[in-house]
Amino acid sequence: MTVTAWVAAIVFAATYVLIASEKVHRVKAALGGAAIMLLVHATAAGSAFFSQESGVDWNVVFLLLGMMIIVGVLRQTGVFEYLAIWAAKRARGRPFRLMVLLLVITAAASALLDNVTTVLLIAPVTFLVCERLALPVAPFLIAEAMASNIGGTATLVGDPPNIIIASRAGLTFNDFLVHLTPLVIVLTAVFIGLCRLLFRKAFRYDPERAAEIMQLDERAAIEDKVMLVQSLSVLGVVIAAFVLHPVLHYEPSVVALLGAGLLVLVTKITTDDALREVEWPTLVFFAGLFVMVGALVETGVIAQVSQAAAEATAGRLGVTTMVLLWASAGLSAIVDNIPYVATMSPIVADLAQHVPGDHNVLWWALALGADLGGNATAVGASANVVILGIAERNGTRISFWQFTKYGLVVTVVTVALCVPYLWLRYLL
Image 1: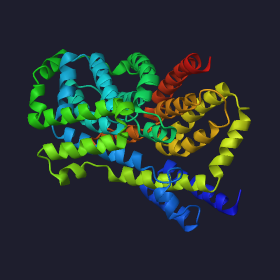
Image 2: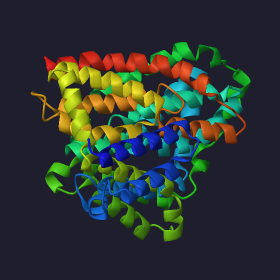
Image 3: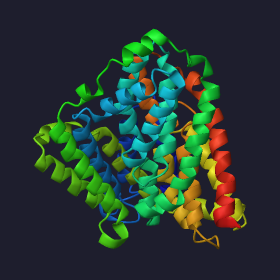
Image 4: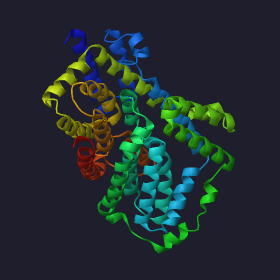
């Protein structure tokens, strides 16, 4: 490798360590790393901002922006609070039934929206319901974080790594529905069964408390019925447009932006309020990360890594797929799966050129490993970090190991179930 390539690799590795250790905020680390890449000429402005192969992936950034605005408007209607109270009443105060309903809602919402936004909306209501039923809230929050990561695996917009994979591999919303959703439904059912065993001590039924929660009126949680109808109508149109992408030929980013614009236009919400709900640090983090990964592409580091990987697996598709699945799960457990997938996507794209057979199985292995591996530790996925933050702000501390001792079990079981699925459907 050239001197510039070595410098780029060292800068990227150092930035990755800072992100993983959380000694420096990830946005600062990503922007600093991107700035150094530009400073040492590992990449240039033209490549960083305008190249389709090695620049900022604006489709990812604007898809997230549009969905954040839509969800921000939905948040103000109270619909998620309604669903949580409804679930508690349908469970009739029974703790395990309550967990099952909350997990199903969380997984489904994560598939349609995204997992970080879903846990932001579900977690505060979980505190309310658990307090009324005198239940320990930590098991419910931990389970919800994991359900969001599993459910988010099902669709293109459910988990940020999927957005990156879809953009790099040219996969559509329908591709994810057809290839991953059936498996995710099975994994969700298995996960719920695991929760019955892992959190069995938390399921203490209190008849008096259950009677009290039955008195709550979920309809009172809806703060604006007109805006709710408008928001759900626009969200329905957006999801339909995602599904009809092969016919309409509109990129998901365009659909999300059009939906966000329409929602702001037809509702009474102000543009300031709509934009206030956007997680700008997340978008900036993505931009900085794309610049750094692009520098590795420009300097040839990615090509050399992928060539070495192809030689290590002797070009065998089955071996490559399994190595990619388990390695992705293991590495995503240590660092956030977003920067991991952003780094691996160009490697997998290049690796696919050296391996004969159905190359898409490599992308599914990457998505499954990264998304499900994020459940293994408290820092493995953004949703986990968000849950821990919400818990701490509400006076409930969930330690790294308290989360991880459950997460490791869930990850090993769910990733292991992916092995026969990938073999039977794509490799035999």
